[in-house]
Length: 348
Image 1 (tube, rainbow, N blue to C red):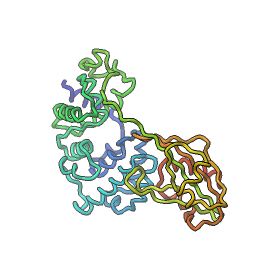
Image 2: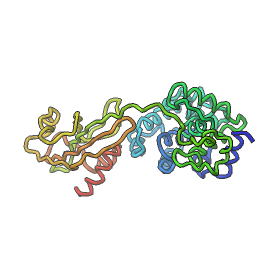
Image 3: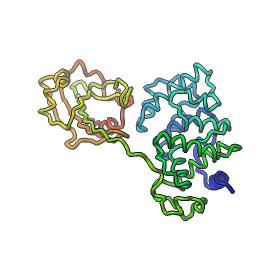
């Protein structure tokens, strides 16, 4: 029995009962794949169920307001996925009359869909022989064939895709693709894989040479950037605050936040007060108090945010036009959501 047949046999015995596996609707498969990028199945399942219930068709998603889509996405992170999801739904509705392209190369032209997602949709829904290559697949192949090429290098990406395509079961590509992904997630795990009961361990080169922990190989990561955020949380006598949409192409585009002053390092109040933006927003008679003595550290893939929330109590402020009830309906970064949960419980 060859590699692909062994994995399929293993998969059919233990495959997980996941809601998106009960359909070949390309919209629902696409939805699940986008949600599960950078997200564990245990967390992503509830989001998938919520989205598929609220937006059962691509038309429903396309006709929704972006703000609502972002609000439902709250907590998943990597919000560009949600914006691209909404944009592509509208594109499919307007340009393809609501019908998904069937071919891998056509799917690749859609915003937010890369080789992995295009391969998953085309193979699972339309039986096109396109191999998926995600983190699980990289790990399985790197260990099994003892491949030292870094998986995050351009050479590695091409090499693993070519190998995955050679191993693909052309008659049942969708099942094979799901099999190898599940195998990496359940059996050939990143940490502490149970190699002793692995159905392909007798041919696994890394296992034979006791080198499983060495694979996959990755090029050294770029340096993590540190950023220092100071949020100005206005509390007025009229129960209003200042809350604004985050503009630009950086993190959290389209989400809402309190006025933000970013600094080069962590600062104290006497260093914050002279800042021009602080002077513009905060009246002289305001009382100012630091909410969290220690910065909240929020870790993103390439940057760590060190955040302080400054509570600014004032009388009626014309710039403060958003009620606390309205804020709860707006999409916010999880950093803000966690603060609001704690702060509002004490404010009320």
